[in-house]
Length: 313
Image 1 (cartoon, rainbow, N blue to C red):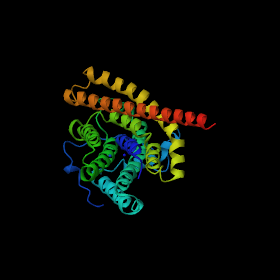
Image 2 (cartoon, rainbow, N blue to C red; image 1 turned 60 degrees about the horizontal axis):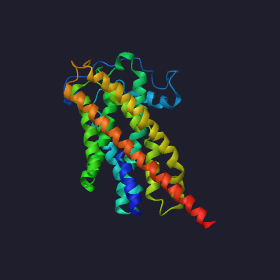
Image 3 (cartoon, rainbow, N blue to C red; image 1 turned 60 degrees about the vertical axis):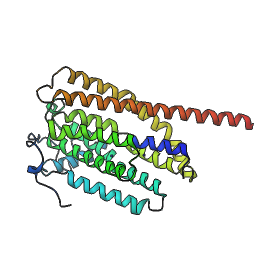
Image 4 (tube, rainbow, N blue to C red; image 1 turned 180 degrees about the vertical axis):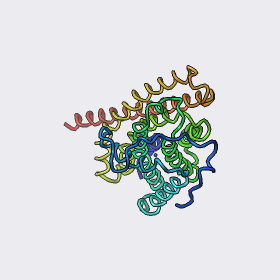
């Protein structure tokens, strides 16, 4: 992101907020090699004692990727393509055509959102302080996480272009997101720290949102799905509001102040800095409008239920 038209609109809006051996050598990646990444990550199987438990699996994975020099985008893209095909042909094969499309898109989002958030958080914790700057050069691990997300948004964009070309809002969202990630990863090769923090904020609600979305698709056909949707809605709305309505704008403000001050002028061109601020600011504004409308619908439905209960008594 059959149900009623209003449910379809809800799920359509929801999808906006959730994108082998054929690995090429590093020489095929544009521009110069990455800066030599630091070597202070904990070795696999021995996470640092101070690392929060939920982050430790991601840290172990990052430690195993520390020495990986190959370009991982092709492998990530093949993985998402395989997951998408499994969703279309196996997991959701009995669903109606439109529901099957939504389900397959949610499935690859499930495999992207939480892993990407954990990996981004792990990289932020693992790298030394000099890499936690809006103008710092990208480290190899940061590029791996960016490639993981670029592969997801590319796959989901192809899904919309092939099957749902009328969903202009989603297509525009994915194109804008890819623009930000690709300019950071392949053109300026600086500023990944800012994007990884934004990635954590954007995807921390992903698991809850995708379950909520799938339950919403089937709430008219399944009482169990309706209960899940009803139970998940308030906590999901609260978490989403805190992340997109509070944490996101505060971090964007900090990011904008830094980039507009000219401190990154030598490594990130002005047009890149301005475009990042505009894209991220627009995404946050649309997200807050979306969750505001969901809050209004929730309170409206509950008020209607209260009025109906009063009439019945």
